[in-house]
Image 1 (spheres, rainbow, N blue to C red):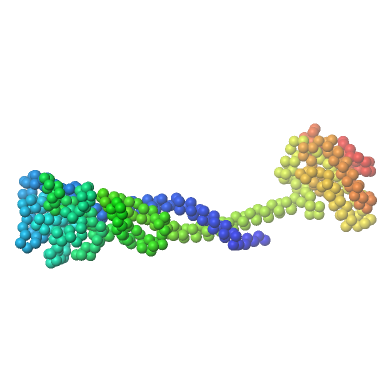
Image 2 (tube, rainbow, N blue to C red):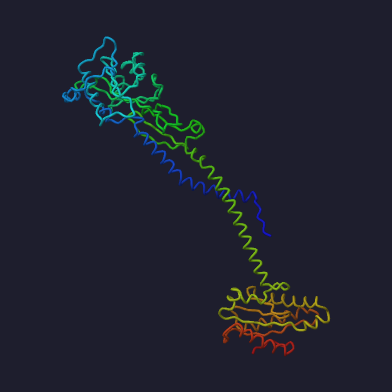
Length: 465
């Protein structure tokens, strides 16, 4: 009956192996997971949830000279929509400002440059006017009018208008805000301003074309947090996953990926590697269970093989003397022993019948064991000892000549006689080797004939045919 016990040592060994496999799988899977997050981050950037394209903003640092020199015939059909213009009471647009607004009306009325996913407006500093270039919800417009929120007030509140920006910030012709909560809509907004300046005096700002995007509106930002971190090089807007993972993940287990939004602003997405590892914990548990089951099955199979080996060996052994029986002739072991030159010694116990009749079968059995012990003392361990009958034995000696086998047979006789078992136990031997014989049966027959010659001598030395 085979029993395989589930021990703690087996479980520990299986879990150690499962952990090793788990680590290897993580090293394979984690790059794919991180690459997936990187692609989502790139798609988030390209989808204009952070910074609209320069096409929508007419490039960096739009020149007033370019607008004034624009083909006026193209601008003639575009009359200003008063519903989109927010002008303080008593204020009026300068001719240059009206030209700027007509230019943007022309641009954003074109299907080619239609604005998508952003709220675009023009802020004019001299008249303090706002002109909304993209469709504006009525409630937003009413709130703007009601609260008298115009260009200069926007600049004072949010500090991202070009006229308030530093020379370093304007070096690349663009000014970015940090994400902020819009007072009107309540959305988290990210804004970009491109200055409109006089070509004769670049330091003089006429206004900005500004694009607002809903920073948290995309699916990418769902379940994520962000914070703005001031660094010696500018502002780093850091996006992280769920706040719980942000708190429990050590810094070295974050994988950061960054994108420069302008010369002073960087957007960084920090991916928690720990979150991926914990996500795959069920896989580790499954590997542990599978490894334990496989270990148990392997041990059971190993025991089965050992049992079969023992059973096979037991079938080949004589139950009394524990040496081979005649079934060994059918094995590969016998085949290997009879390749090349080999010798065969036939052995027969003398006077065993007399011992049985006189002293009983128990002492007769002991006499047979004495012969076997003498054989073990004289012959090599790799020689085959075979019991072919009650007191009859055959020894197969591989790589052994007839002369050497005769010497060993003589030593066997001496060893048995020296034991002085009941002062009558001796053996007779017959020897032959494989030279000159075509098969084992013919060698065995030759050794058997030599045995009868030896027995006929009543205890003389072993002879050969």
